[in-house]
Length: 438
Image 1 (cartoon, rainbow, N blue to C red):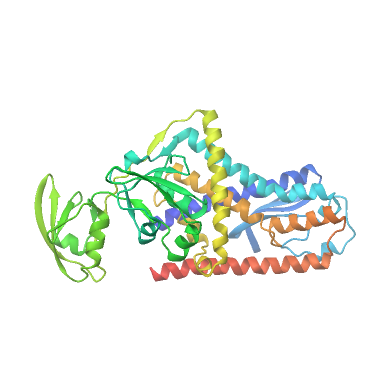
Image 2: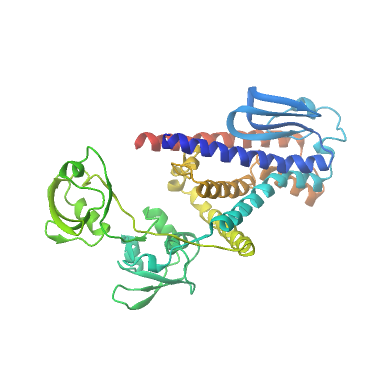
């Protein structure tokens, strides 16, 4: 199956699960408070539905437009803009006649379910598959360093010992922590064995984002070839999977970083490489392409280890992982409001890229948990047409003792709806532009 199709299937399954459970979060408290729910739909049923069936007062169905789902609650100003119903005298089963605290619980139900679900999935992932670890010992060559990393004081071959006095279980988390967790100092061990403590500038996150160097530190590993792309120059020259490049034009090559830097300066030029194959040295000649590329896929020697956890440990670690996932997402949200951040917004294509090209249960559930937590946060934003917009108006009512004007609510809902529609179009337009550019 094509990778794009497999990613699309996983995205559809994940979103379907999250949408149904989110809407159940509204549906169940509405029923508890004896509020009539007219519709419960997975996907939007613009003009027609793929399936629908009425049970009691509620029509359950599946729409054809996979941009979300909804529950239509009687007496509620929402995206359906049912003005006719709102002009009738209020009825005891309607949303608008319920106490503000009940309406608040109904509106917070979907977000609460998404948040709990995300945390629960992380707990179960850790219980079933264990916790991933990638200590320094798994990267004997240390880290490569970008130009920004060098400005901060990192050097090639550094091993990360401590971040703000604590060791990292997954050493590659260092980049995420530098970007959004206000790191103050990092202790490293140089290639010569010396230990050094680096003071991290307070604006490191902004510098990483503005420069595009989101990974100023990256793992070093030998220049071994994982696979050779057919019909590329390396294939014609005789390179094979498993070859280790040890020299280029009599220059010793120790890792992929050195090979990449060497090749970048040799675009369209002939190069003589020395490779180690089955412990025997051989010489291969080839001409690099216009971008200085050979046409090979590097072999990564990164080996992630798993630690089995008990149920109690999984609950504790899963809660911590869910908390930091939410914290990191909220912390980096500020970048959305920059010009560069706006250009990097993504829609369904970007979300689909979270899933692997082949089916993997752990990766599927990890991506689903991440999306669930994102949906919880995004739905709480105080934008009319989102749950957070309704919550904002309800809190205003509870504090002041006055309901906002219904006409104002209708206009706010309409503005919020078109704002979200524009955002969806823009984000998916970015996906399309990136796809065509590639």
